[in-house]
Image 1 (cartoon, rainbow, N blue to C red):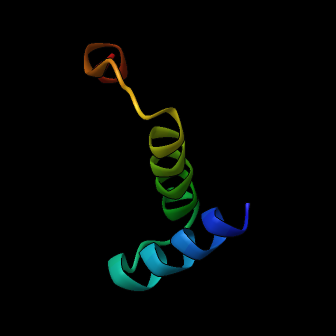
Image 2: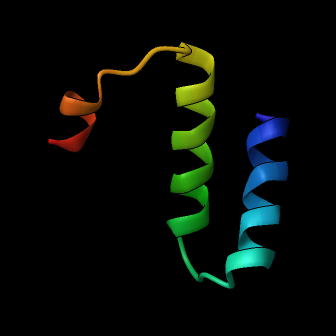
Length: 45
């Protein structure tokens, strides 16, 4: 979870978002990196 927190803090500073958006984006990016393969048609829905 430390990596998610570091990414969330970086996103929050760079994007100047408020609320849960940086947390969601950080968790989504980390999940995509951990899985290493993504079916984009399923992600789009």
